[in-house]
Image (tube, helix red, strand yellow):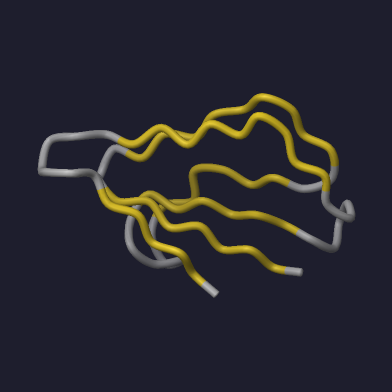
Length: 68
């Protein structure tokens, strides 16, 4: 399932800040895309135990895709 998020108006950038994530490494992944679909530019992949990382979307939209 894709979860899209949009900036409040044009010209904004979006920062995705992950404080921590704990998934089953190599199986569960959280992907972030700079746009409204998974065919847009991939800007971040989180799996396993990640702490405090950022991903930046310059298009004004970001999509999150969680694969379990």
